[in-house]
Amino acid sequence: MTTALRVRGLRKNYGDAAALAGVDLDVAAGEIFALLGPNGAGKSTAVEILEGLRARDGGEVSVLGVDPAAADYRWRARIGVVLQEARDFTMLRVGEAVRQFGAYYPAHRDPDEVIAAVGLTEQTRTLTSRLSGGQRRRLDVALGIVGGPELLFLDEPTTGFDPAARRQFWEMIRSLRTAGTTILLTTHYLDEAEALADRVGVLAKGRLVEVASPERLGGRDHAQAIVSWDEDDRRCQERTAEPTRFIAELSTLFRGEIPGLSVVRPSLEDIYLGLIGSPETGSPEAGPQETGKPEGSAR
Amino acid sequence: MSAMTSGQTVETVGAVMGTGTTDNAGPQRAPWREVWRIGRVRMRVEVLQLTRNTGLLIYTFALPVVMLLLFGSIFRGKIAGTSATYQQVYATGMIGMCVINGALQNLAYQVATERHTRALKRLRSTPMPAVSYFLGKVASVLAATLAQVAVMLTVGVAVMGLHLPTSLGKWLTFTWVLLLGCTACSLLGIGLSGLIRSENGSAVVWLPIMVLQFISGVFIVFSTLPKPVQQIGAVFPVKWLCQGMRSVFLPDSFKYSEPAGSWEHGRLALVLTAWCVVGLVMCLKTFTWRGRDDG
Image (cartoon, rainbow over all chains, first blue to last red; front, side):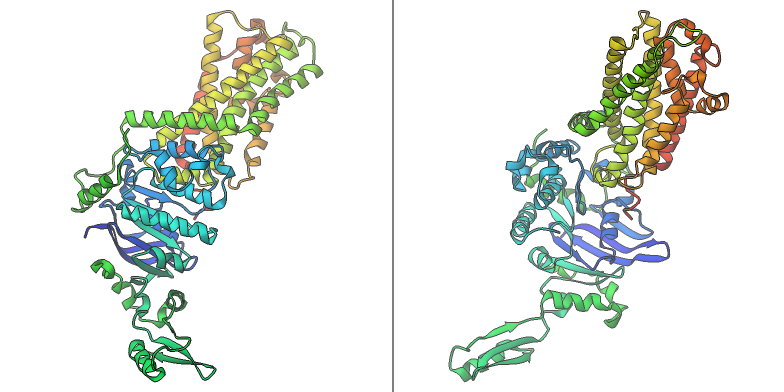
């Protein structure tokens, strides 16, 4: 496994307030990593430091083997950046904008192919100011990938999308991963992280409180399951650490089919809210250190 | 340029990241050939955006023409003690105003808007060299200013009794005054863009410019302004720009009614160059790719 991104003890202060208080992070090449966290947790600050758009106050950062603070045009040609909501160059048509940005990169992808990849072929001659919110966001992604980046940063890419547009968007992101692009994603949407990410990191109050695959985050896979079923016109429920054994017993009891059976694990949202609620309630020392190990690297 | 396939992308990831070190030490500047190539891309985009901005175009071209026709119809006849008419003097003043509009005002507003809409931040995240960005701005300023000056000259000659000079020397003067004025105003415009902090904050720039135009002899014949006002006006570049234009388009005898009794080309060049330096320092000190409201 090669490392696309390596961060150790990253710190950033705004005045006296610490926006990032020692973040450790590893992202493997070819991985989709989602950074979750409430507003003000330091997500955008962290990502902008990694993109070379913001200076840091401490720690080590290596992105594609280069420190972003000392990066040059050659390094920028290897990354793609999709910032939070944008509404610039409203006087250009979609095709003109993508071609223009492509021309900045030494080995760019075919602009028409990129426009097709984000599903904007029909809008090639449309002024960017006339695009819908979702179309505009897809254009932002087109501008981020036209340079053929090895590493793509996506900062809250689907804010304001309708459900169908989000599904399409996710498909597009998956196809980028298939093509070998490493992706660092920040998002508010837990279903997005669950649908796309190989691993998620939860940032709260300037610290990474947990890094794991979406299925394992916060011990989700070991958490007790809730088995519920119908019996004598009422709903029954049982919390258990061994749902399989319990259901087998239940099945023997019912001699086959169990009416209205459902097995529920705590949702990613339940786990997430627990994690960001008060990071101190967990184990404050263990948090950031644990994240130093790329748990999902065995993937 | 060939399209890059995804297969190549994967290879690059492995090749460059496997070792974690790169053979080249420290950041490097883009080679000039690349700066110029991307600069030409930016020039085309800037001029294209300019021609699409209908509202701004109408304002930019209509304002000086309307002003000129207005002033030209209110104040008529010869200026006492000279062979020049008020209309001719206003026509030269409006050429000065075109430079200020086209370079200083538009650029301050454009750069501030691009900073506000995060266009600059997005550009910063690409390999586009900063110099290429400024080359694009230079092209848009030159295109806008030259087009405006051409319109002004046409209107001036057609209805304001302006005479185009016939000597090569005067056209040379016209060229260097215009270029130096454009450069000073462009640099000042980019420098001042930092003062426009919100989307609707452009009054910070256009209000002082309006005042400056009154005390610099754009709207009022300079020699008729009170002496203290003349002295304040002489500190700023607008007065010198207009004086340079008068030296090109007015009868030579008009120089005796200038404050110094001459066209002062030497001092003119000196003052405009000094403002270029001031503008450059402002740009270097204050230019940022990020807006103030953005962290």
